[in-house]
Length: 411
Image (cartoon, rainbow, N blue to C red; front, side, top):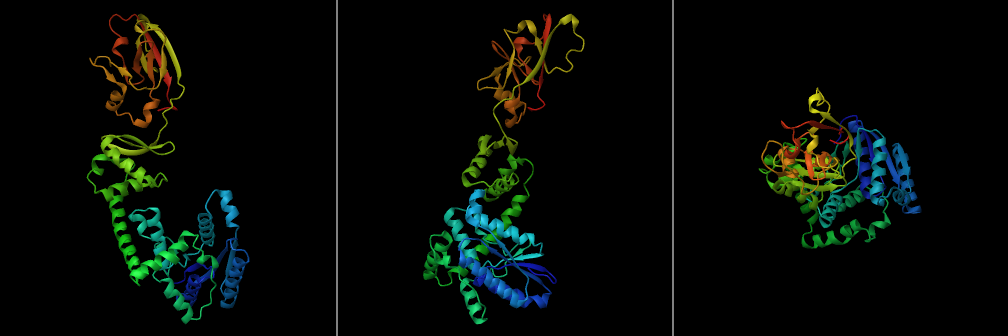
């Protein structure tokens, strides 16, 4: 966690955990040549008591000769303005403050008890193996030297070493979920096994190892698009992790319902909505995420009719042409609708546009943007792909209808 000469920003609230952490780092300061700075956040939640805690830490740092910096916020009001929960907002501001110091390491006082509480909280709310790994001892430049110490051990250490600390009176308020876990649920575990926290910690460590293995296996199969045939060979735990990691590349965290919906696409194909306009798509070859909107754009068209004996290079620059005399009524352009059919010229068959698009391997998310050309009787062509047998050019054609569509912003 620490290297010789490290600059360390130490998060200190004044509670027993953070004061033991500061005591430990002060002991290591000379041995490792550490440069310590104490950072304290006064959240504006507990009134005068919170201010007093900050002053307690300031006084301790002055006596110990350690630089002290404080960030004062009004967490309840600011969180409301940001549309965030107070705890979430406070954490965001706290770590932002810590990172702004630019230190080599950021030391926080999370303990084994905090880790156990976190895992039980996630278990109650719903989590996967990934959530059971708990609070990591090291994450990038954030270190947690007390992560293997229980609260009981920390209290004992503070008493034996005469380390002063303050007590947050809200820690006994079981209105807060974490306090309820700490004050009521963990004691019930300890009534079954007095070393319950240590036992749960061993499970957390085992879960973290298993999770790390699954994550490394999953990373082998990540790419811009995922191979359906390859995904089908994977164990379900690895398969789900591949999809979760793939979703994270789109800044999306999948819940169980959406994860299962995406997995189901491997057998059913098609699409399923992830969030907003983001959908998961699957065909027999690939699974991928893409933006999708089934509202077709307004097409900009240009058309003309030319006598057959006047044709030169009129086909250049036009994406569709047919026998103008075989057109019934006017021509209009729209996107595909359910039930649309076409008889591709020279194929001797009739098929739905859905089947044609499948054959042409047109991505599902782009199908709404493929222009379908119609007259009063029905579909006469798919722009850039097919013309219907009914209006094809043959030896009896006397004039040709040309159509160009601006698809630059569509496909």
